[in-house]
Image (cartoon, rainbow, N blue to C red; front, side, top):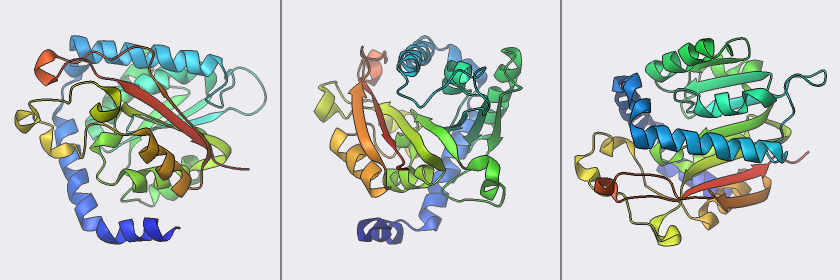
Length: 256
């Protein structure tokens, strides 16, 4: 652990992180499954799906067709929501574990997995890697070929600590993928507006990240071969929230 990382852990007490986690859990437990049918949220999910499929086809996500070879490639979908990332990458991973702080999100994930005939290879449970638990110490939650966290880092109080926790669960040669918003200063997009009245205002630490931040956090977590790219197109967002935004895909690898 670097001195900078140790200092961060001292500044951000577990009590503070727990408070932030409690607010997130309460917010996402209240969300109805209907949120996924809101046009711009649905379009965002479809965009992420298509971007991931293109990335997987190039081999950039440490993927392997799930029906090939002797060992099932393993993926962790952290802050999994209803499983957009898991379903997009199901053809490449024989064992997909979803984790989310919200029991309601976990329930939606598992229902959609069953509906999609994927329940034999993907399953979600409630879990929080910042707080930790005996359950998460089990072998099932380590040694992943890919760990993905999509559109959730901005809900984390200490993103660097989150990336550290995720990196610890990777196998050697495993890839960590973070998908989120590019900061308005870097993307040129307008910032999210109206957040002071938004029901999620108490669950968001920031709305956008810069390349240099992700590069430093990945390196601090001991990962290498960092890459960063923008989504091919801007993502839809309502005009009353500032209009379209730019999404990024950042990844790095745990060394052998």
